Length: 386
Image (tube, rainbow, N blue to C red; front, side):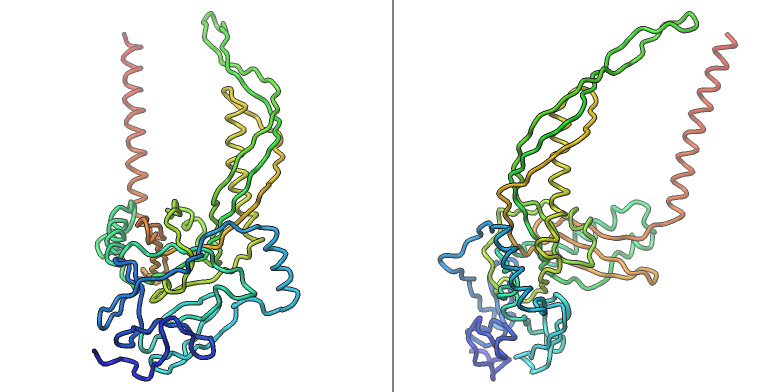
């Protein structure tokens, strides 16, 4: 048996340490800290190579949660304790080297900056004063594959500075689990509006006739029912929500019941956007879908929607953790962020722009427009000359 990197460690796999403040998963063979292995989808020791399958409780499942029932519990938690979040600062002693690791804000899973051992704030994700995580989607894209996707993304950026395209992006990838809410609802809507049908009439002007399009409007009203399933809302603040939405779709059919073992070796954040704060954002997405449906139901060539009244029934939710490769980099003293969906490989991010490339493209377009106009002018002059 290999010498243990942590001979003083006598805890069992998954056992809490430091009075429940820290959480690691020691290797059963050498005592080192197990990490989640993306390729094998299991825990693996980086020292001796021992693997351990992630075990779920027999009754583990991912059930939809009653929105209003949980909100009532949250109100009770808030009324009993002012300090009901992990937005402050916590210190956790690393079992590996004995150093104190500081957790700030919503970060709940990290690694020791001194010895690299993975360490977590134990029980934060299922704290009695926090809504527990119901499901997690594990990492499926290896770091090297994520970097290859990033390289292809950089090269495909139009109007990026040539130096940026040639050098690429340099920086450290961090694997991070981000919190998301999913909302489900059966909606019932009543709508009122007008349907516009085009027709054509013959108009005579200056002894010339032409077809003129007109629109006949008629009043329309009706009802519409639609079920929305798993409308995703990012539960973290301080991040580009539009870029997170661009990482969709997520293969939510691969979601597993939550276990802290999957977080081993990765960063993880708990939610900062509360459940009731996330629903108005989900409601906007639902309302947009309903409005599109209503226009289709009204039909015709044009639609005027004057009012839509919607009721949201059977409202349920889930709290999920989804994996992202995150890279922050600097280019000419300006910070940028890039996000990679760690399941599908989709890349979204911020990038620099080349003023001269954009200027040259505009000049080329203006030159083409001028050339086309000149050719048209010459053609008209020749026709008049005839």
